[in-house]
Figure 1 (cartoon, protein in one colour):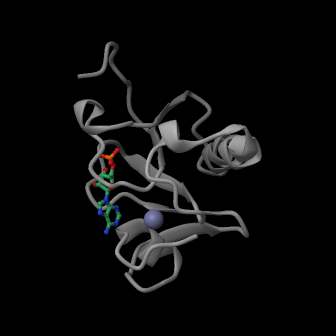
Figure 2: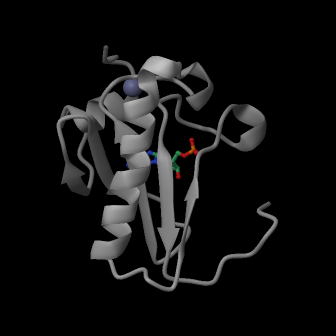
Length: 115
Ligand code: AMP
Ligand code: ZN
């Protein structure tokens, strides 16, 4: 299912322009428009799920596919010194786009705990 009202569904459908770096049958990755690190990609499933908390056991392959795509992209981008994967879930976590997405951040030292 996709939603014409959803920004990330529209990016996946090429209705809204984005710097897409990876397109696969089940997922799309593109550059974050407000990068928080030298490398900042957003990896989304083509299937519209508002939040990771909406995933069920039937979404196991979809969820694993996001992580494996992140690893492949990190290897391609030579982030061998490390990278951070983030999923914000809900308003208190700072989720601003209600389409499940995995942030891939790299190219600088990261702090912990995150803000
Ligand atoms: P989150 O705050 O976890 O929901 O992440 C949403 C991310 O999407 C933010 O880092 C935004 O900068 C990014 N974003 C919003 N609109 C666009 C867009 N049109 N193209 C690329 N990234 C976007
Ligand atoms: Zn969507």
